[in-house]
Length: 162
Image (cartoon, rainbow, N blue to C red; front, side, top):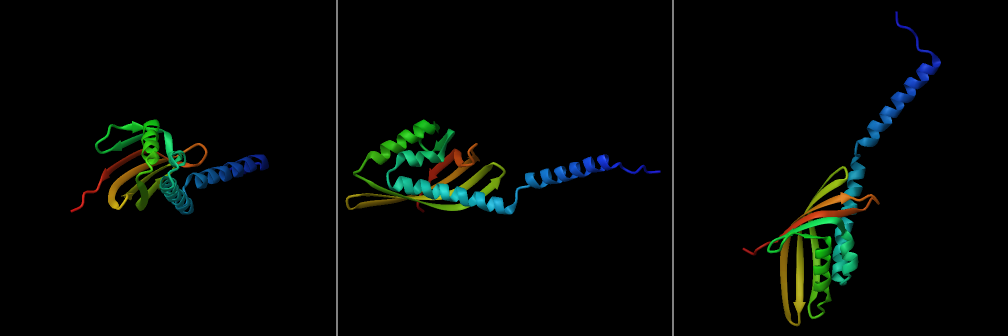
């Protein structure tokens, strides 16, 4: 014979079931959250381009996490300080105007990590001479403790015209 649960035992059982259900739903990423994360990452990349295009190196560097490692063709791997120093030096050259535009191809989000495939188009102008180049890139983002998405790894390489 099954013994009926006492009211305190029944209450504890119901509270346990409710808390397990809440924990399960809370740990399951909702599609809406993924869309919000993708939008936030996309905004960070466009904000970076805007900062670069206005020569605000300090603002542009906020996209990079403290533990950044960059891999760029023709250069040694570099951390955040080295990347930001190169960026600052480049943007101090007022003889050349620069304009970067991101073309985001794909954003994959899984929990607190995301991978972005994109192509950057750089237009450089010095006097009458203009040069347009493209770089393919793969960025790995991590959600930081403050909730902001930052790049922890990136790779880029030039796309050679056919």
